[in-house]
Length: 205
Image (cartoon, rainbow, N blue to C red):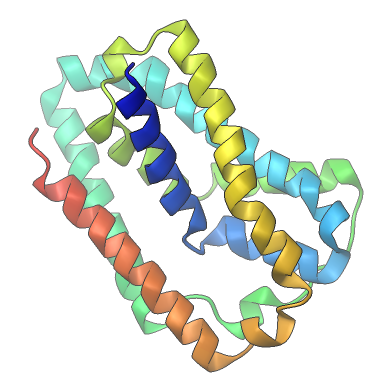
């Protein structure tokens, strides 16, 4: 992989991670109820879930993309449809005050496991790695060293993007529950999602 490829991945994952979704909601809810330190294991669980999907994409989709063009096209446009559906959902309602209600604290392992399971069941993450990732990275050229770098980048990007959510959750409780602030956040998220869908749809096959 080239430096441009790594930078593109960094930017794309950073934007995707910053868009409020099930993972962000879970982190904010945990931080509101349990504090910064107790939420860190959940963040690492979320990141590990991303690595699982990254691994599946690198190890599996390279073959699918090169050998089964029709299958890849179906995955691609299914991803476009899902992103557009998410964009409409965020524009109309998105994250509400009720969704950031505080959760009770638990031990570190349960927090980690909860984060891991949130990512595994998060369609936005699945779409990113199975539909978006192959459109800007040539997965057939990823070497073991490249793969290791991508794993490190994944953890670093997610930590850098999501730590501020955790750190500000307690202080921003009233802001997060303000209908006006939530409306702005939801519409920004909807715009990013619609833009991502358009980028996937218009990219050459």
